[in-house]
Length: 349
Image (cartoon, rainbow, N blue to C red):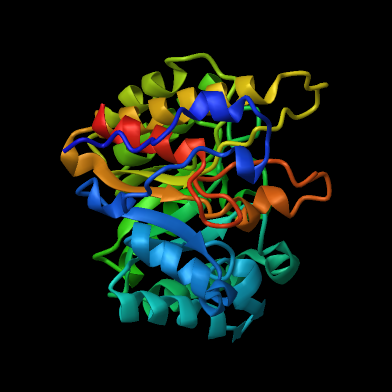
């Protein structure tokens, strides 16, 4: 099948500037029809009230990941108080529409301190175990996989994060315990260790893979690797491919779990022309899709976008946002961005 979907040149139109009028005209063949593995997106329950979002989602996706409403910050309202309305609605939406549900996330360094802080060790451990049992147990049989531990590696990649979980249970200890408890609560789910900047920062990628190796060696039931793939479009060509080759050596399923690719340059003056940004974005996103396709079929767990339309992106909720970033596959009107074609081309390379 010919998957070249452009009706006119991406880069020629992109050179005209960053406007919807300048976007290429692309026939948006449903992504989920092009590949045998699930295509996912992040979702929030309120988006189900937007018919345009629902139509775009059901056209292209076969899996959902709750963006925020299955995280501890939402669910855990107090030591023994749980809020289930939004995560239940997301699970029900998946059931109704035949979508696979990916659970995100059970234990994250960024959340839980306000509830767990001040507990003695015995109470801390009991609350830790109870939370995982309650949440993973509630969605047992409905969730295909869980991000059990999210973002355990330090920001710069040098070792693991210090956080309230590691202070009580040890840096390796809280990770191992989380997976053991999740396995007990939902033995059939694929249990993922999930992190970001693994492709962007080779030091962090290597530290993450050493952590996976260490956990597997001690019998921790890690069932899959999650790489978020919030891509820095200025990284060298080949760096994404190198990480995926290293990650594949464990033989575990790999979830490309949170794809976006901002056009912004953080912390430096950005004088790049718009055309250059689009070229960089297309190059890195296509490389990512190709690297995923190069995995053995059994290791391609899912390819998940962290939002559908640019205006759905967490990057566009930032106070620094100027309304011009285009980090996702579709623009505000639901029309494909050049990044869409990069994914399609990577899938068919």
